[in-house]
Structure formats: structure tokens, C-alpha cells
Image 1 (cartoon, rainbow, N blue to C red):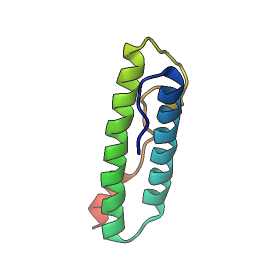
Image 2 (cartoon, rainbow, N blue to C red):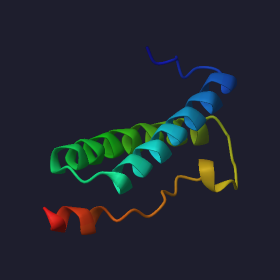
Image 3 (cartoon, rainbow, N blue to C red):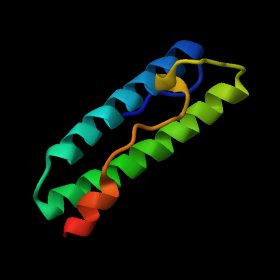
Length: 87
């Protein structure tokens, strides 16, 4: 069950957790060869990115700021297009 995004500690914890989950999903995506599992990774990445954007927007509205790339909203490049074209 997701935490309430109310207090600062929970918000930062959830941002880091979602970021870690996204990083893990990208690793799985880069190592996957089955087309169904590649597709599942793509959907999971998109859902995690949407959640991450929401959390960052919430953090900004609460006055948070950070120069750390892990919290900046930038996502690592992945070879999604290359994999999709292989199908």
C-alpha cells in the first residue's frame, strides 16, 4: 500500500523508492529478450515515471529543491527504441 505523501520524510522516502524501482526496471529491460517481458518492462517504466513526476511535482510545491540527479527528474537513457524495433 502506498504511503501518504503528506510529510517530508515520507515524500523523500517515496521519491527514493520509486527511483530505485525505476532503476531496477531499466536493468531488467536491458537484459530481457522475450518480447512479452520487454513490453511489460516498458509499461512498468512508464507507470513508475508518471509516479516519479507526480512525487517531484509534489516536492516542488512543498518547497523542496535538490541538485542530485537521482531527484532531479532526469531519467537515464535506455535503448527502448532499439529493443522495440527488434520485435
